[in-house]
Length: 308
Image (spheres, one colour):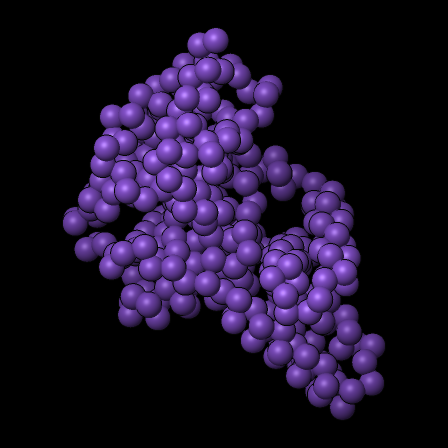
């Protein structure tokens, strides 16, 4: 029985579901707990959504986690990497199965907030691309691990209360479950001090990579939602990735104290407007598919802030 408990503890820790590990140590029936773990992991798998954008691109979603993968002649390019190592390992497996290959070449972080770079390390063999302010942002965010754990724990508790108040297997329950699971896994990464894979291919204002059959054009928007917000445009697929810069109806995600980058904002808006007639799909940082009207409204909102 002692050996079974040890083996099960190791399995649960590696899965990233720390709360189940705690229950194993106190449970009088380890086999029953193992069944609960398998049930939860199966439920996680069942709630991961795959959206096929086109023949070359898929969007993998779990709650607010959104990872896009694009298959190119030179390999797979991933946009954002989710919040945690365990969940992103699942997304990677899905991408490999969908594309029938595992030649990951680049991961591009739309900005350096933990829910976009937490799974970078899963793509251990790739180059991570990000704006040059990103590494400093990551370092500052990870400087106080105890504070990070307390902050994430509070979020987990909030979703636990939501789950208790929801009828099981309703949409609200699923929404609370996916969010709680995301932050449970982020907390596990913090507890285990999983190393973050930093952007190792950085740029200041713009960057373009040629993947044979398509190009990825990147531009730094300026300090806005974060210090490292970029836009990513693939002309051959007519796709624009907007990160967390704006949401439906063009609502900008702006920190009011960061208005000093107005000149960069203006340049980025001009950059967008030059390409807008060749954009069919806009993908936000959390997987929302936005419209051209949303983009136009965002441009208008930024212009009003810059010039009025």
